[in-house]
Image 1: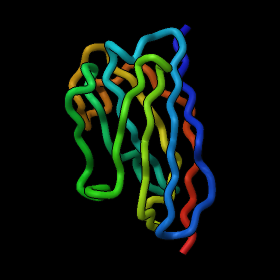
Image 2 (image 1 turned 180 degrees about the vertical axis):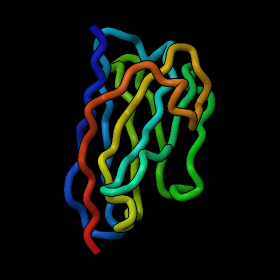
Image 3 (image 1 turned 120 degrees about the vertical axis):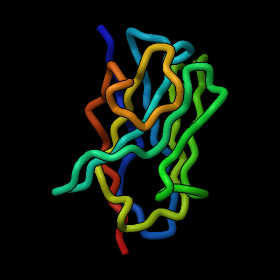
Length: 124
């Protein structure tokens, strides 16, 4: 059974940093692309950043340019989302998702498995 588990969310002041983790069981990140998406209250889910299954390419939303980065540790079967210079508008539930042998994609249909999400709250 596949399970993705996000962790690392919390409350942080604007300008601060957080690192989210996405740990997988039942699948290997070495052959899965991983994307991070987020959903703020009253808004639709939106793409944040992704890494290809090979780990060789990443893709991010314009809104996180220069602030967020993604990395993959295949040995730990974990993907990290490093978030710096956080803004109140980054407040959302953050979800990780995995897609078998996919590129780094913003299209949620590319992803087969989703985590339950972790709350990130940025105070002004």
